[in-house]
Length: 432
Ligand code: PLP
Image (cartoon, rainbow, N blue to C red):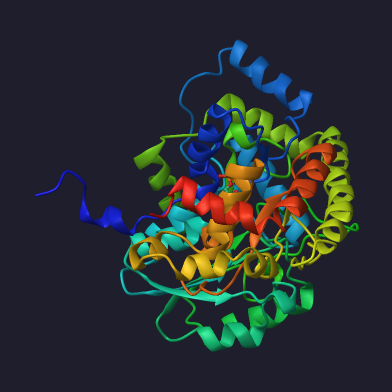
């Protein structure tokens, strides 16, 4: 007998949170750490929204509410979906969740049985792969290629779907790559879903970065394609676009009322409901025109930083960085640095057990953190299966321009410090 259930060995995590322990160790040693690891806007929730939530709380709106979400908030979300996706949507197909993460798990619990195949982007948000393995489903990572701007084509998808496919996950704009699926790409992908997948197959369209697009681009959803509204779970929320990560406000728009009632039941089985006073603030995010002004300001700041950081990274020998079209991440290829610093050779020299616990980009990530005080994320943190031989880091640009400039300067110094890397491996014994 063991204390913990066997299935826990198949549950993964989101390393962006887990890295906190290493960051704390560095801070305790007196190192100043630049946090490029977390996907949280460095902006605050807008004052007009804060005021509403505080007012509601003071007025006594502090009890339980409908587990599916406050009716007026669900109406506002349904209107937002109708207006931005140009599809039918009613409030009884909306379920409010505690952030945009729970609908991922709800989707797996609602639609996926052990052995079912799940197609998901890799690199992609790590919680997708975590649920695939946790439920004993069959992972089918759809590898996003750097040369294709980290998008994937209808042909790529057609190669991965089979009659055992039950769920296809799409995320645009993407974490971690910032890639955006263009309307013609979405149309091709939709055609594959319509013609090659059973009508019971569901598409999970993670649109949490829908508000963060550069060069004035508009958001496009797979759910707007013919035949797709009845197969797609759209998920989004307030964390990223409205800088409200701590509010834990998210939602799912389901293909049918029956499927929405399953999501509601999953809320009942876990959180009961999302705090109603927060939902009132969340409703105003869609209804008050001041929100759009705040969003524009933030997105313009992200775009200015992107425009500085991509050329600056590309100027470092050994780095190749694509220009993200949305979200607030850059995802540079650091294979050249790994080679120059001897990271790949050091990785290959590790014992088999140690190699299983890291990757070359993971070793570089730790070197950057422990010796240069730059917290980044490695490629394997965005889907491990099938990622070997890919050497990337993700840097969040939700950080001030000064910090970004200082961080990139440190990264340039680290990129030629082969001696420092060799000493680091000996001294820290992280992979002994
Ligand atoms: N989906 C993607 C692609 C994300 O990047 C994140 C957060 O990083 C989430 C979902 C979860 O968002 P939330 O913080 O609202 O739960």
